[in-house]
Length: 424
Image 1 (spheres, rainbow, N blue to C red):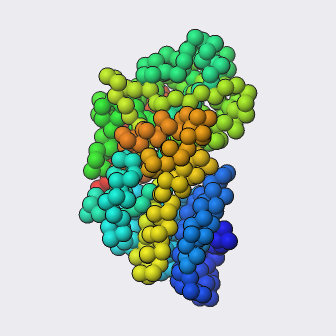
Image 2: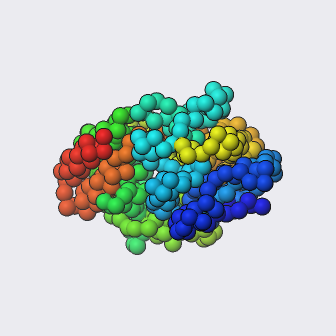
Image 3: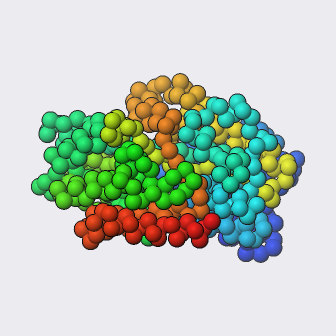
């Protein structure tokens, strides 16, 4: 992600004292060197990061950025944790909010309050801005990076054959999914995930519950799995399964079924567009649309993606250089380039006017970006991901008929409360 050097994996760096010194941040040859540990390694993400970083270095010849690229988020977290344990963290690192909360509790990251000005924050979409603070002390610990919301992808030819268009409400969605199902075709295939962690199907369940009036987590991170809204959301999915309009799978089953012409819909991240389009391969027109609304026109969506933190080991010079890089990444020009090449959304509305031609060809980018004004991120508490895994298990149990919706959610609620108590 340059004349910029892509640094070796940190695990290699910590093999010996010499390697450790070679991989640290610092200053040499009159330059300030900073390291950024991140996981933008798939598809177009890696070259896009490299191009943006080269542009930054050209504009800031006194700063050298070394990207430490990890293959996935699980590896990324393990490497960041190992680097901290070794006393040699990167200057900055890509994180989920709950990771940031854990790091902040250990005082290994620093607030960005002294760097970000009010105008810097005001330039961001409201949901993006609200996701940068930690509730422990209400300080700004993060800066935005890759952000996405959920949209619906659909087989236009399949829906048209049934006289259907993109559904506007979840009730319409259920009716349409049932209408296109049968003869080897299913309305939608999902992967809820499991005890090891949630997947896209679990995110959809959270959105459905929120659309019904109650999110599955309160603002302070308390599980609300047994609310009437959550039970209704679970029964919605159970009803689709009983009607033959929903099936469970693993490894992006919605994308696979849609691409094979065997699925009507995929409810997935906007960042899936490139992969869904590749799976479809032009075999039929792939439609995109905003998520349907809940009762009374309630709009609900989930903002996903990561932020960036600055680690406390960085020197003053490294921190200053890193902040210049972070500001560059969220500038309108950089965000326009990032959105056009990565599939993620621009975190600032100022990028959209610079994307006019791209948006004409890819209208999903505009309505997805607009969802960042209201989309909600999961609250940044250390137990959230674990609790989501428990919720994913409940989904598997209810959808397959092993338990009722209420019973499955009740069991997950008890487990999630225990996880919350142990994580506080």
